[in-house]
Length: 176
Image (tube, rainbow, N blue to C red; front, side):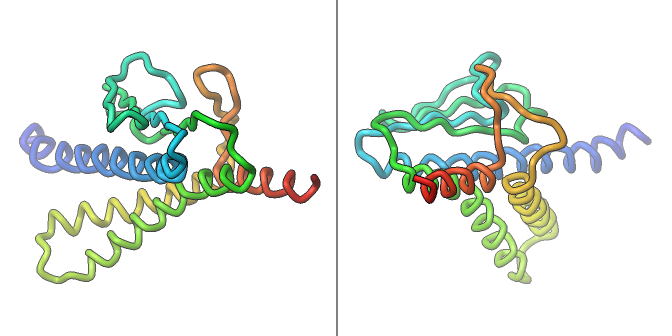
């Protein structure tokens, strides 16, 4: 009886959580990558499930300028990173690239909220959209509020929330 309950209730909810986490992180990091790809000489590498670690991941190539690394372990899909490459970016381009991730999270949450207003959607879809709204909201918080402990990329560089990073860049621009 307990096994059937877990199979019919807990497992689908866990799968929805993992899928929602993946979609949110993917959209957020793709949001970072799009302004980078607007420069025809630049390219981007997106990581879903890590802060730049390629081990235990598989790669997808989208065109010649976007590479996506996705961890095999879905329980790591709540984190991600986008690394831009190419010519030296101006401070304004860097700020645009950094802030595009939270904007993508915000847009994802707004679209999920709007879709929730459609009354004819099945309960399962409405439930999943509710998860998407929650992940978008928590993603926005994670992009603005520092974590309780410092996080680092696979090469040892510190990881900062997007809003703090953009503010530091904006402040350095004003000081020069």
